[in-house]
Length: 110
Image (cartoon, rainbow, N blue to C red; front, top):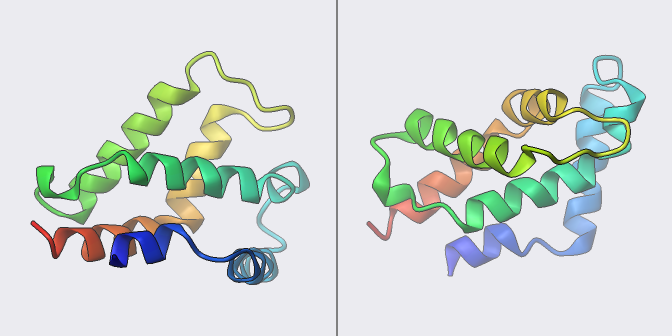
């Protein structure tokens, strides 16, 4: 249930989070990346839904697994205006807390 709550944030919560992230890092993120934050968040959500935290030693090991899965997905994928490396960098820099929160909630069921 906790996992579903994290994954199924309602639209307003997602919009608020995006606005918060954009304001927090407004100067640091290129405009081509800012415009694609919702798509990157969805990509991360799919990767998290298909990951099994119980198979990892800790949150850092889990983060590496999630990024590996995203990297595999991005092979041959092209998002206009954003490279796979920019996507991974954005996730590692700005969405690590989402990965950590998912890991903590999901690992309670291990």
